[in-house]
Image 1 (cartoon, rainbow, N blue to C red):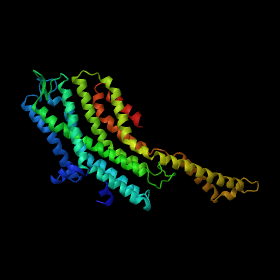
Image 2 (cartoon, rainbow, N blue to C red):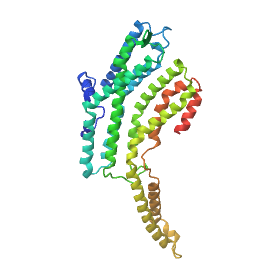
Image 3 (cartoon, rainbow, N blue to C red):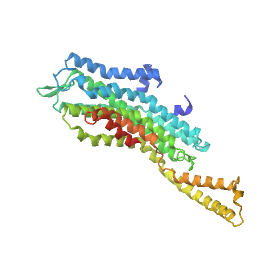
Length: 390
């Protein structure tokens, strides 16, 4: 691992990382990462299945929501939890590539490199904080308790809660769900939310460094479009969140009697909001890019006025020979200045592009397609998605 990688490794640090190291489930390379994902999925899912089966609540009509027909269980503990673990490679790898590119592309000069390194070191200390992870564990249990409490009062008998004399009570599977499965899922999500906030802080601090940006860069973002591509790596987390949300909505439609049409605004709002949240850190570069654009337009405007005036005086004279333009560099320089001015004019204050937006929208929409397809033909759904992203 390079020095830069070692300074900022968002998947490393904290008590959970020490646990992976001691159990042989680290680092974030394919073999140990795959084992880690399968181990966590097994711990969260298999006991729920076994306890429900022994209690006769896995299938059948004894309860309104048997284990085998609870979509949220599969979405969270067999799909989303795998994605949250695999994000240690997908997201962290993309972030490392972004950090390395700042240096490889010469955006951070030698004078600013100590400050750049200090930003990374500070952020590494944050992601390695034991207190931060302990707080997330406590919050995960608080959220899990709240979720289970809501299930106990919704009046729906399920594999994890049965009606009793004093109200609904937790089954053995319900206790495992409360103590192990749901907190583990919540913790993994909070862990990446925290790391996303740390990464946003990194970008905000880098944006205040004296970066060597180029107004005429072909990416129309001063050379910063690669940062947006880095953010698109968070699509795997958006996919996990959307899968969990879609499964909960499916349970509401099938078992709660909620009209699917009433959920369309919530689905659309989630897709838009998730995309905006992931791309929001790019806004920190707006002041620097806006200033770069203004300066470039003034500079290229001045150069164009001087150059074009000289060109006009030289070649618009009555005695000027048009054939002398053949092979003369003057027309080429005229076109080059015009291209420079146009590129500066097209510079975007926020380095966002469609290649960054499309994966996020697609990840948010994909898990919702099966649910919507119960009411809307699949071909119409796909046509609508294409209109949004094309």
